[in-house]
Length: 427
Image (cartoon, rainbow, N blue to C red; front, side):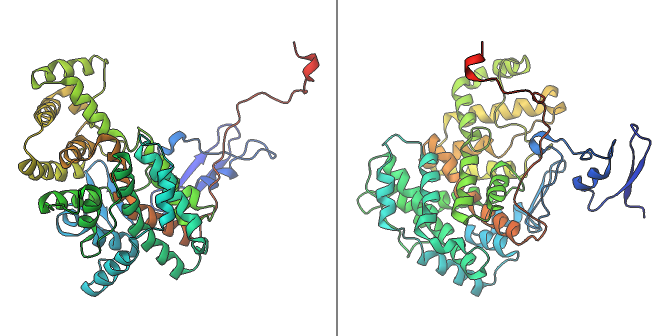
């Protein structure tokens, strides 16, 4: 057998042969390597899962060194430029591109469920006017599990499909409602004569029954959502899988993903880019800012990625989207700073040698801002985009017979056994 690795335990001199499957060894195979008969065997120690695969997946493929991202085998460039968001969601959820009949049925099912229970509006009214939109989204999506107790029947395929539709249909409505809540505006209810993106935009921006749709901006928003639809085992997706492994309902599992995305290291990166551009202030200040970063006095936000070690393929698409958007809205002064920052960084050996290239967050915040969305709402838009990926990953985890409830091991480094000291005797 050639697909194996031989391990010699220098403590004992014993030799072990471990099988290699799909370029991996099973961590559980390490348990047979023991120094003494009564120890528990070796474990793999991997903080933050830098080199540990927690699952097998057929949903998204990434080659970070080559800058490749594919949904179900289809290059992201082709999907984003050609498909609609609901078509992309169908692909992620079902594994294949829909026929015209299948897509029409999927779109109709989602439209039918866009309204939310009136008690949801009462729930949202309990938040302060200045509550962070992601906190409101987290609470409201988690609350949906109490409205649909049938969602607990996670092993029934029909029930899973119904919850899938409910999530795709109702989360944009909730997101639009909390956008209005933050501005003290009355809620605008869904219009099912509009498409998925058009309906969401109308619910956020309609004033007095009027809203003039801009097809260029709506398509730009759709492309951004498609680019965020799934991205392998990132923090929020891992949270959805881990919480879902307890066999909780999908609303609760997705709310775990929202909670993870709420963190500034995950969903808040495009906000950080805008703060950086504000700090720079003017194109003339870019060279000095670059030098300060190289001197360790700051960070170049929107550059580099945990996975991509070349140009993020999504960033290339977003840059083209930015051109389309600013042609409609007029140039944002920050864009000139961003373009100059990118130009200098891509020519500077300091950043090139470290393989720091623009990522998906570098231009997305500028685009959202140009569309009229405030910075604290950017992560909500991220969540809307990531929603079909979360659902697809949750369902794949549920159907994977190898998966059990998530329970990582630990290495205990605390105190050894010691006698308990009564309170009266503690000095």
